[in-house]
Image (tube, rainbow over all chains, first blue to last red; front, top):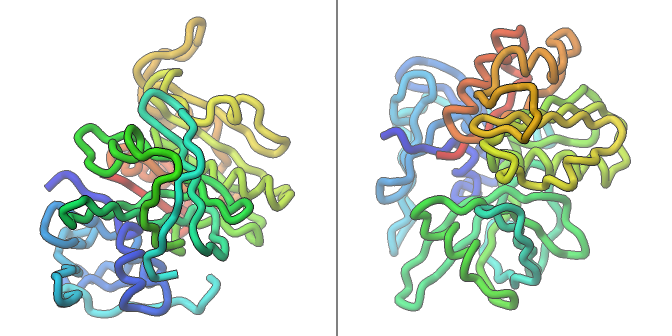
Length: 88
Length: 235
C-alpha cells in the first residue's frame, strides 16, 4: 500500500475519456469532502488497472481498468469534478 | 495527442550510473509545456504491454522530444529503457499529458523549484523552457540528492544562467570540503535558498513521496499558500 504515484500519472489514460485535462480539475471527495486537484490523488498501480485515493482521507475516488474489450472507469468516490476554464 | 504513435530513439546520453537521457523522434509532436510528461509503451514479443509515464526533460527541438529516465530497481520499463533499448529502435509514445504540474512562461511570479533525486527532470525542463523563451522570471532551484555522483545534469547546473540560482544539497555523502554535513533537506535549507513567502513564488516540488511530503509541509510551515505549491510524486 505504500507504493503510489500521484494523479498526474492518470493524465494519459484519462485523455481517452475526457476532452479537457482531468488532472487540473478539482475533485470533491465523496468521503471527506476535501476539494483538491485530481493531480493530488494518490494513485496505486499495483492492482489490475489504477486505483486513485483521496490524499486527505484515503477513500477510493476513481478506478480505471483497461480490459481487452473495454475501458472501465469507476467514479463512485467522487461527488463532483470542477473543470477550470481552458488555458489556466 | 491522445493516440499512441511510434517514436524512434535517436540518441542516448549517460547522465549518472542510474540515469539516462533518451532523445526520441516521434512522427508528430506539436509541442508541450514545461513540466508535462508523456506515456511510453513497450510491447513484448508475446504481446505483453507495459506503460509508464515519464517527464519531458526540455522543450521540443526540431521535432525531437527528450526524456531522462532513472533506473528503478526491478523496474521492467526503466531498466529496459536505460540498458537495452538500442538507438534506432522504436517505442510507442502518447502525449504530452498533464496540465497541472506546468510552468507557463506567461506567469511572471518568482519560481521556487524543489527537486528530490530524479525529480529534477521536470524542474530542469522549466529552467530550459525559461532559457528558450529568454524569460527573466527569477528562478531558484534547490536540489536534494544522495551523493555528488547522483547529480543529474551536473554540468548544466554548475553554470546556471543569470536569474537562476542553483543549490545542491546532499543527503548521504557530500563532496570533499563541504561545510554542510550530508542530511535531508531542512527548513534552514529552504530558508537560505528559497524565496520568502512574502514574494508569493510559485513552488514546484518533485521527487519521491517522502521528499515531496516533507518539502511541501516545510513550505507551508514557512508560510507559503498551498495553492501556490504544486507537487508531483513518484513511488
